[in-house]
Length: 202
Image (tube, rainbow, N blue to C red):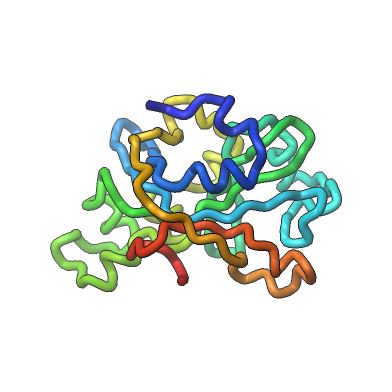
C-alpha cells in the first residue's frame, strides 16, 4: 500500500523511524527499481546545525524542504553524488529524512549494472551487500538524480509502500559525517534496523 500524505506530515523523528521497513520504489520508464529502507537520519532545519535549512535558511537548493511533507529532496554533493531525502512535517517547517541505506528488492540485475557496470551474477558478496548501503550508493542503484527533486511521493514515479514489514528492532544513534555541527552531532537522530546486513555503518 502506497504511503499517503498524512504519513509524511507528522513529527520528523517519527517519520524517520516509521520509514524503516517500508519499500522505496522508482518506476523508471516502466521498470521498477526498489529496496526496503533499512537506515535513515532525521534533519530538523530550524534547530539543527547539521541541516541545510538550519535557522530557516531558504535557498534555491533548500526551498523544497519548506514544502508540505510528502515530496522528495534530492541534492548533489562533492560534485559527484546524489542523496535522497523525504520532506516531512508541515509547510514552512524545513525538515527532512535522509534515506541512508536500502535492502535491494526489485530490479537487482539493473541495479548491478548501474552500480558496477556488470551483471549480478558477477558480483561478489561484498559488492552485493554494497549495492545500496549508503546514501549515494542507493541513489545510483535506484537511478535517482536531481530530475526527481521535488517529486510528489504519492505519485506513480517515485513512491514508498507499506509492505507490512515491522518485525525488527530499531537502533537509535548519532548521525554520520556531521562533526562540524557542534551540539547537533550528538543528537540521536539516526535510525537503523538491528542486524540488517545492508546498513551503511554500525
